[in-house]
Length: 86
Image 1: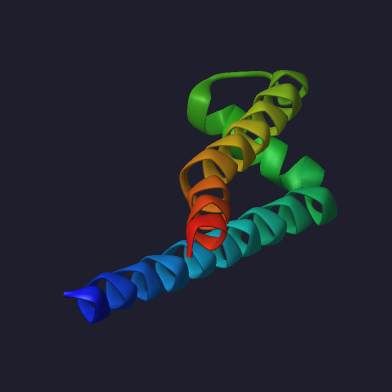
Image 2: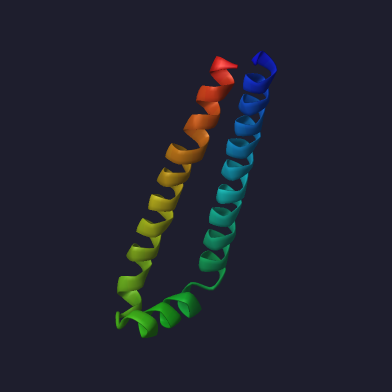
């Protein structure tokens, strides 16, 4: 029974660690693409959603912030909590 619990904690530790790494990698990649091609990205999203390019910038930054907050809450915090109790 004890080995099964440790194995589950190890699995969860790996899951949350890799989830954190992958999600922050996606965030970094997205931010890099947006930063390097800002006008292009804004034009595309402005056409898709019927906005002006000036309205798209703040919306995208809010999306980045929300993605980062959700990654911290649902991946990083559980990983830290499991590291503390293991």
